Length: 332
Image (cartoon, rainbow, N blue to C red):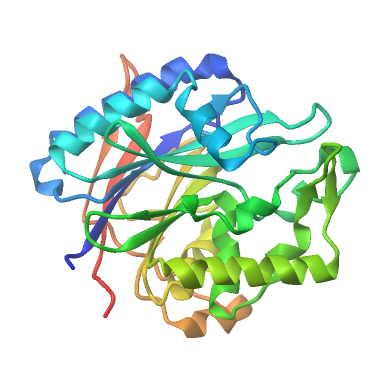
């Protein structure tokens, strides 16, 4: 296998809050694809990764069965732009995967909105995932403001995709990356916050026996597919430099959990993008499994970029997106 190459697109601003912002995001998506394919020395490429919450979907996904989730994503207003961008990228580097984050409407007006990610290859949806591992605040507080999940999220093969390099990637919705440690006999702490959607569309915290069952199913899923690359769509940070915790405990830990594999994230930066290509890289490779049990002593293991460029839109002088190329050697 050749080295796997992942292109991340970090965006200045916030995750989208409603469907009105999708039009601007579709334009940025196609512009970024055009800028990428203009760089002949970036091929071959395996994936182009955008942040979580890049698009908004006015329909809950967590209440749908897996085939219906796929149909809903493919019928979304932004799906055409994803297909066009993916086809453009595929002509440039055959087999490249386009991964975009989607924040969706809640299953019930008193729940938090769904979070998902979709992977496109050429004109087809190649995979998708709904967030499986919530952060603590998404499961705490009043019962009507929880983030709902569903049993299928922990056993679904749709979050895995074969890359053109020959490696297998797992797509992660933000904090899902922290759950990868449990697949390599690391800490299972993130599973304590899970709330499953019941038949009355309420998010109910899982019992300890059910939590153990979910961990076992999650571990079995990863053992069956054996991914060595993590593509992590992150919602965002206020500034570059605010991502240190994520780099150490999310990105680097994901690499360690995948046996030292390549882990790359893309995020929104609310106020300003990184000013240097290697600032806040959100990428790691070759991290030892000792990292899984290092606790507060975990290091960042920043992976330097191979190349990068910034995108401006219209007459603005402030960059709107930072596009970076990362490469990880294939695992033995």
